[in-house]
Image (cartoon, rainbow, N blue to C red; front, side, top):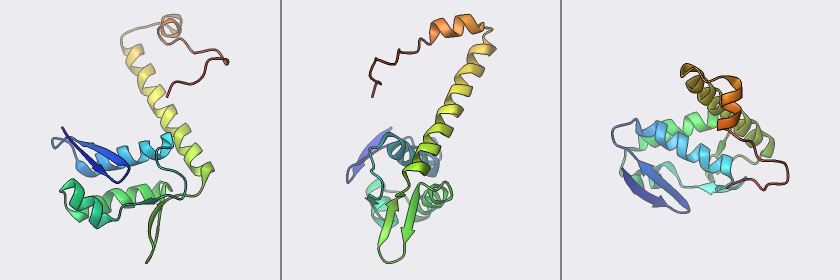
Length: 133
C-alpha cells in the first residue's frame, strides 16, 4: 500500500484494487467526516493524477462518480469543489452509515448471532457520551 498526500488530503492506494474506486471511497469519506469542508476547492484532475502517479482518466472517472453522488461540483474555469450543500453531505453520511450497518448485520447473522447477542457485541453509547472521532 502506498501513501501519498495531495494538499490536505492523504491517500492510501492499494495497487491490487481499482484505483478510481479507492479515490472515490477516500474522497467521499473525507467529505463525510468533514476533513474536506463544504465548498472547499480540491486538487484538479491533473494535479491529483500527477501526485498519485496515475492517469488523468482514472481521476476523471472518480470525479464523475463523486459528481453524480452530488459530493463535488466542477465550475468550468474555476476548479472542482466540495458541494456547498450540508444537506447533501448529511444524506450521503446517512446512506453510507446504513450500508455499513446492513453489511455488519448481515455478516453477524451469517454467523447465526441472535439480535440479543448482536446488541451485546455492539453497545451503543448513551447520549451523554461524546461521539468517537
